[in-house]
Structure formats: C-alpha cells, structure tokens
Image (cartoon, rainbow, N blue to C red; front, side, top):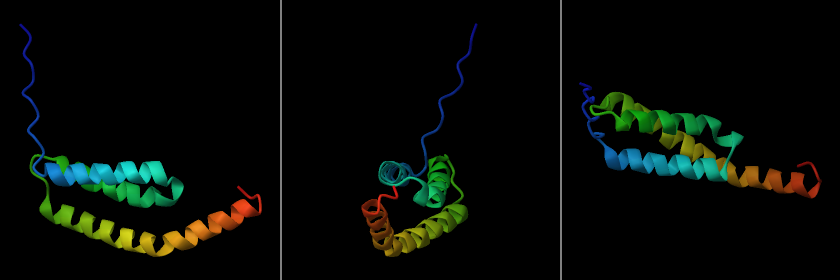
Length: 93
C-alpha cells in the first residue's frame, strides 16, 4: 500500500507571493543582467512569502531591500537607457 504525502499547506501570504512573482516576470522579460541583484532579492522575498509560516522580520527586511533597490533602479533607468541608445547609435551593441 502506497501512502501519499499530505498536501503542502497554502502560502501564508498568497497575494504578496503572487505580486512578487509578477515583478520577477516583469524583470525577467524587460531586463537581463542589469537587474540580477534585484531579481535575487525578489526571489528570496517570494520564497519567504510562500512559506506556510513566513518569518515576518526577514520578510520585512527583504521588502525594505526591494524598496531601496527599486528606488535606485528607477533613478538610474533613464540614464541606462540613454547609454544603451548611444551605444546602439555607435554600433557598439
């Protein structure tokens, strides 16, 4: 007789996990290497939010890091796009 393992409990924060998953998808489709570090933070936060009993202190710290990284990237993104545009015009891409 084979016993099946009990089903995994649902994540404690499904909406947060879903939102973080959406952000990871957006990062993966729009940015590559330049968002590597932010992607890692989002992934770690998503994994923590998916746990049945997430560590709220760890999650709060990760979301603080996400907030800071997002602000930094939002400030630098126009500059990065400008550099990419100039490189493209010069045939460097």
